[in-house]
Length: 322
Ligand code: NDP
Image (tube, rainbow, N blue to C red; front, side):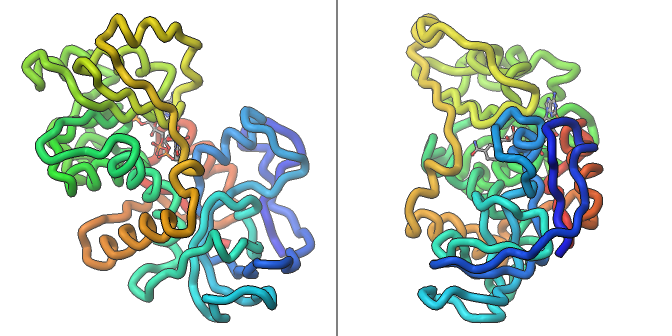
C-alpha cells in the first residue's frame, strides 16, 4: 500500500510517499480502508522531532474510513461500517489498524471526509468548552486563532453555550470566517493590541477565560486579559513553546488558574469518547455545527499540506485523501 513516511526529522520535505507493506490485525483491532486522514499540528511536531517518534515513522494519527477486517474478539462493529478515530499512529496511509475501543461509528449523514475533519479538533473544542472551563450563558471568552481548525469549531460551540465570543485572527479574510462562525467581536491581533481591545470590549473588567492555542506570541498578553480568578487555557503552541514562568505571576495578576490540557486526558473512557463524538455527529447532522474543510489534497501531497498549515495559510481543517 501507499503511505507517507519520514526517515529523519525535519521540514515538510522529509515526508515521502512510499510503497510499504500493509498492516495486519492484532487482538481488539479493526482494519480500515482509509477514506480521508486529518492533518493536525501534532503531525508537524512529530515530523520536526519536537515530539519524539521512532524512525522511520508513518505520519498522522487521525482518519476515517471503512471497516474491511476485524479481529475475532471484536464486537460492536461489522464489515462495511464507516468509522473515525484519533490518537492512533500511522494514519497517512491507504490502510491502517485501530483498536476498536478508539473507533466511533459514523452515522450515514457524516462522510469520511467530515469524520476525519472533525474528530480531533471537534472533541478538543468540545472538552475545552464543556469540561476544561465549562462556559456559561452570557460569559465572554477570548478565542485565539479563531479561523483555525479548532478555532472555528470552538467559536461555534461557545456560541451554542450562549457565551459572547471575542476572536483573534491575522487577516481580514480570516475575520470574515470567524464572524460567520458566530464570533461577536473579532480582533486583528497582527494590527491591534488585543489586550487593549479586550479591555475596551469588557469595560475594563477582563474575561473569565482565554482559550489560547497560539502560545509563545500571545501567552503573556492573554494573562492580562483575565479577570481575577480567570482561567488561562493554554491548549496549543502554534507560534512556539511558551517560556518557563514563575507561578508567582498568577498571584500577581489576580489568583489566576493556568492549565495546559490535551485531548488524551479528556477522552479517557469509552463513555467520554462516545459523549463527545455523538454530540459532534448530532450537531453536524442537524446543521448546528459546520465543518469548514480548507483543502482535501491527495495523500501524496502531505508535504504541501504541512507547509500550508505551518505558514498560517489555512482556515479550518486540512485533510488528505489516499
Ligand atoms: P490552526 O488551524 O489553528 O492553525 C494555526 C493557526 O495559529 C494559524 O492559522 C494562525 O492563525 C495561528 N498562528 C499564530 N501564530 C502562528 C505562527 N507563528 N505559526 C503558525 N500559526 C500561527 O491549527 P489547529 O486548529 O490544527 O491547531 C491549533 C493549535 O491547537 C495547535 O497548536 C495544536 O497543536 C493545538 N491543539 C491542541 C490540542 C489539545 O488537545 N491540546 C488538540 C488539537 C490541537 P492566524 O493566521 O489567524 O494567526
